[in-house]
Amino acid sequence: MTGPPAAHSPDTELEHLIEEEEFLEAQPFDLLTVPVIGPLLRWRHSRTFLQVPLFVVSIVMIFEGLLGPTLSPKNLATVLTWVHFRGALVLAILCAGNLFCLSCPFMLARNFMRKWIHPRFTWPRRLRNKWIPIGLFVAVLFCYELFGLWSSPWLTAWVIVGYFAAVLIVDGLFAHATFCKYVCPIGQFNFIASTASPLEVSVRDHEVCDGCRTKDCIRGRRELSSPLVILQRGCELALFQPAKVGNMDCTFCLDCVHACPHDNVGILSRLPGEELMSDPNRSGIGRFSRRNDIAALALVFCFGALMNAFGMVSPIYIVESWLKRTLQFQSQATALGILFAAVIVVEPALLLGLAAWITHAWAGVKNGWLAIAVRYAYALSPLGFAMWLAHYGYHFFTGLYTIIPVTQNAVARIGWPILGDPQWTLVGLPKTVVEPLEFGFLLLGLAGSILVAWRLAQEDSEKHPVRAFVPWGVMCAILFFCCVWLMTQPMDMRATMGAG
Amino acid sequence: MLAALPLLFTPGCRKPANDQGDISIEESIAPQPVRAGTETITFRLTNRSHQPVAGARVQVEGDMSHPGMAPVFAGAREIAPGDYRAPLNFSMGGDWVILFHINLSDGRKVERQMDVKGVESN
Image 1: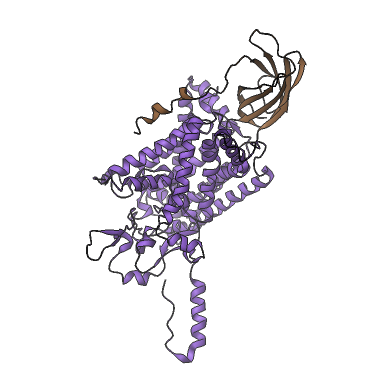
Image 2: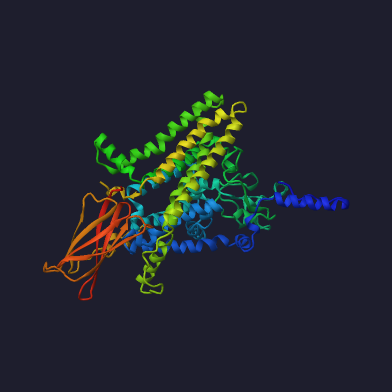
């Protein structure tokens, strides 16, 4: 990106005006220039302003989950967590970006703690990858199914308490944003999902950065007389703005926006999924093709979406019963473990292994099969995101109004019935409206995945891009039909631990 | 402080969902196995001395175990003194919780709960 062309010749004023207009038209949309929203986000305390309401809601959810109604559909903790929060999170990622991390209530507690407790350690080098959060992400999905977390306000409240505790312990011991970057499973979900977002925090003009000597966006803005005093911290996730690419690892905290002395960082529009179509060296991350852990995260994200939806439809109980009969066991955890291993480990290994082998053998791509699989694993992110969107969006839209009677009930229970009697018949949008949306999301995801795979194939094989693409295109199509099949199955929501 | 939190909020501190009072409910659902669609819930209300409780107005509410789903409602009809019947439309498969909202003839209100696990999809 370059600055607006300078007008050197007065004779060509008209040309200059046209050029300037073209330049302005070529500039991406910048959320920070939007009236009201822009000034709000640029305000130094904007993040705290957004975090406080979510923090208050989190505390209410904890108390409501522990002390409120035991019936999940009547409890604020379960309704907000499993219907509204999840749906709002993926819709925000689809429409804007990683807004949940921006307003993360856990980070508010952590920042408050760090006013008094200064971490003494740095996260061990060998753990500076995504393997721990991948394990936690799978563990959360597994526990969600096994214990039917959605059906238990009490367990839901403890998940929130556990999250606060984990944040305070990890970031109380380790410097920078260790929890966000190396531990948080929600964060990793948001990072990989927001590769499909239309907005990213990015440099407006790289020439300005070329002339920058202070690098405040990463070092933090320091006091001139005392450079050890940080007035505004820089990026805690080690993303150096001029070399940052895309949304991976970006929490949208806007520290870089506040730190930049040249006002050169914006929230800019881009083509969703664009960052997956190339493999540059990314600040704080390196090359995607060399990050087996992030590729694994993309796969768990995609196949975890299938598994999570599979846990909510009838066929899972047929498969579980068959497994128990065939392998002669009764344990629900074992049956679920086998299913998780099959869907999240075996299935992607077989599909990606086969597709990579065909790409290698048929298109003549020189890399080994593992390197090819790692490179193309990212192409599945848009489809995986679409599946999460279809699933969570379904619950969000069909249960949209359930928050009203649950809130009425909660307020009435504390002896203050100002909202009236709970209107339990208020539910949400009809399925006839929501189902086309779901399939629209899935089609968008398929288009995104195919586009990414095609662009990677074009880069990999100038001679035979079609041959390089076909295995991945076929795999995307197979996964798309799996998604469609899942969404058309009758819902059958059981807390599997208690199921027979 | 965090370590002490579990002591404050153990499940034992909570009000039981189904306090017994002096009204007992004995419920059944047919046909078995329960499938999505309309099923008949039959229940008997008795008092502490095991006498049938007649003349109650009962509304039956079915909720999914998952939040965000539409509850279903049905009014119960008294088919014999103390015996009631309600047709309830299970709109989908899964785990359901049935709530009996009971208005006794003496004006008292009682609520009872019944779990229906594993309603099969059609």
